[in-house]
Structures are given as C-alpha cells and as structure tokens.
Length: 524
Image (tube, rainbow, N blue to C red; front, side, top):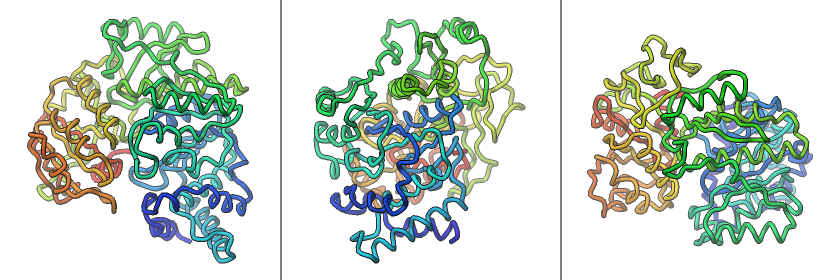
C-alpha cells in the first residue's frame, strides 16, 4: 500500500467528530482492535495528558525534556497542522511515509478482519485507527517513554486504554460541549477519567468547579496529587521578573549570569528565533534559567505541568532527568502554531506567493546576512533581549505574521493577553476562520475589538463556518470585517492591509493555521 492510499483511506473514514457521541466514545472497540494487534499499548511506559487548553504544549515540553534527558521518546498529539504524520513522533521526528503506510496496512487489515468476523460492529473511527497505529508504531520503535495527548475528553478517549506512569490534567474550559457536557463540572468529569487507582496526577489549581471534580476523583481512586504550583513563576505586577510578554526584564544581565553561573555553561543546542519567555526556576534543589519558546501567561502553567511531571518521573526512577536536562528540554521545545512569529511573504492579488517565502525574524540589531531559513539556529553575537514591541529591523519593510491555534474563548483570551504583552498598541489585522460548532460569537467579541480589521475565510474542514456565518456571529462587533474566498486570498489581503511593518494574526482554528502555514512555506 502506498502512503497516498493510506492517507486517503484514513480521511475516507470521515472527520474524528463526524459521528454521534455514542459512536465516538466507546473504549470497548479500541480494546478489541488492540487485543487483535497483540496489545501494543502495553509494550511501553507512558504519560497521559488531558485538558481543554494547553495539553499539547505540556506534552511537547515534557517530550522534549525526556529526549534531552537521553530517553528515546514517543509523542502522540492531535490534530495536525499540515501532515497527518505530525501526530506520531519518535525523538521529535514525525513518522516516515513508508512506516505510516506499512502500519496503516497492518492495523487496517486487522480492523477489516474483526468487522468481517463480527468482533467489531463497524470499522474503527479515524481517531481510533490513528491511536492504534500510534501504539503499534511505538511498540515497534521501542521508546523508553511515550507522551500521549488525549484527543478529546479523557474518560472514553481512545488513548485512555494505557496505564500511565503519570496522569496530567491541564486547564479545563468550555469546549466540545456536544460531546463532553455543557458545564465545567461535566467536562471536568470526562477529563478526570484519566486518573488511575494509586496513580500520580499532576495538576494545578484552576476553576473551582474543576478543582472539586479533580480532587474528588483523586480521592476516590486513592491516587496521589502532584501540585505543579512550585514551578509557576511569579507574574504579579510587583514581581522581580517580567515573563508574560516573552521578553527579558531590565535585570536580564542578572538572569543571564544565573544561567551561566548556576549551570556552568552557556546556551547549547538548537534554539528557534522569535519572542521567548525567560525566568529563573528552582528544580530538584537547583536553580535553572528557563528559556521557553512558548509565550504568554497561560504557557507558564503548561511548562510548570511538564516540569512537575518530569520531576515525578525522576522520583519514580527515571534518574537521567536532571535540572540541566529539564532546562535544555524546555529550551529546545518545538511546538509550532503557538504564538509563532514569522515574516510575511509577498502574495499576489489572487493569493499566489510571489516572494521567496518566510524567514524567521531576527532579534533587533541582527544582520540581514545571518538569516537562517532551515535550521532556525540561535542568532550569533546578539544579546538575549526583547522589548515589548519585539520585531526585527527589517520588519519595517515586511509584515509580521503571528500564527496561533486558539480555537475556543479561553484560548482567544490567552491570545489577546499575549498580543497585548508582546506588541502593546501595535495595529493588528486578524485573519480568522473557525469551525461551526465553536463559540464563534464569543470568540469574535473577545478578539475582534483589538484589531483594526478582520478578514474571515472558510477553513478546509466539513465543520467549517463560512465567512457570512462568521460575520453574522460578530454582528455586535464594530471592527471592519472583510470576506475572502480562500485562505490564500485572506493572507494576501491581510498583508496588503497591514502594510510595511504591520502585524497579521492568523487564528481561530488549527486547520486555518495549518493551511496558512502550508501556503506560506512555514516550517512545521
């Protein structure tokens, strides 16, 4: 079977949320499939991460920490930005096309046999198939640890058939109410379904309703709560360190000295350009200099969850996890589409790309001659300092694009806060697309007022809202709204509207962000 055929067959199963809740949520079927495959999910240790927002960032950071600690690490996330392969990774590398086709053939043939013999009532869903493929891939790759992001919910999600060494519950908010319930309490019950009897559960205080549910689930299961609060830095207005804006504080030289004096070395490894979040942190009795590409106050919580999970794993015997490897893993985290900043390419009136593509932004004062388009290495001979209105000098001539997959009201609030912290009052043009089952009106009322103009486009997804639907949902917002016939046209219109040195924010759906990044040639 070819890779193209395998991918086509996967998409022929329909979107992951195309079925009714009862069809989607049933662990009995995935268990039958996995049993026929020889239980690949039992062949590796794992960490299972649930939550509404932030679970992917937490998973990516934890996987990077494990890899930096010398462990062969699997990572399973969803959905993907551009290629389905992105969801299955070993040591940061997406599954190859040949391996994807081979494992799809194995799992697909097994599923077909089970249906023909009456052991399954119907073919497994898209997500069930992909989860089984991930388990089979990891079983063959023999990783030391696998980090699994729950697809949706937790209790009845296909990933929830493993016995994780650690369960992690990230922030809970309203989303997917059709499947998970209409209240925070109901949704939290689904997320807390990943708690295991006697297991370790890493979490942070959050909404009172969610706290109650998670706390009761831990007590009822006789599990052990691991509080990540010690790993969240202070962010109050009077605190010493300014972190939420992705910038170094005025005392940056002190923090830089901390990184070198405490650890006895400078920055190492490959680090992506762009605004970064930096602050000191005490981990395992040692002070480290956190340097994360994940920007915003909400990301402080996600990084804290990852650090707490790593520390818990060390206490369980994963002794290669050290303060140094935690620092390095955070620094080398790669999680695209989360407040990712790039420079705009030129688009023609109909959306054809005319320029040479996107180049990562340099820190202020960096030479144009040191642009790196492939490896995105750290800029040489520049001080690690960013202002609140962070941008490169050459951004005076080209628009900057911020890609962020915020897709629900809580995510959009986080994006709005981060934009304000990083860019201040800089004029914003928003390219927006959203799925029809999301809280469109609320998202528009949160985000659109901070923009000078909004350009709406339809996402390439059967659940996508059309431009007219988005405009109607945003009827109470006075911001100028334009409609584009395609994502490519929306990008071209936005870059033209923003002008030289302008700021374009692409958001509303991971599918929109993925398509925009593909069109603009942005590294995934």
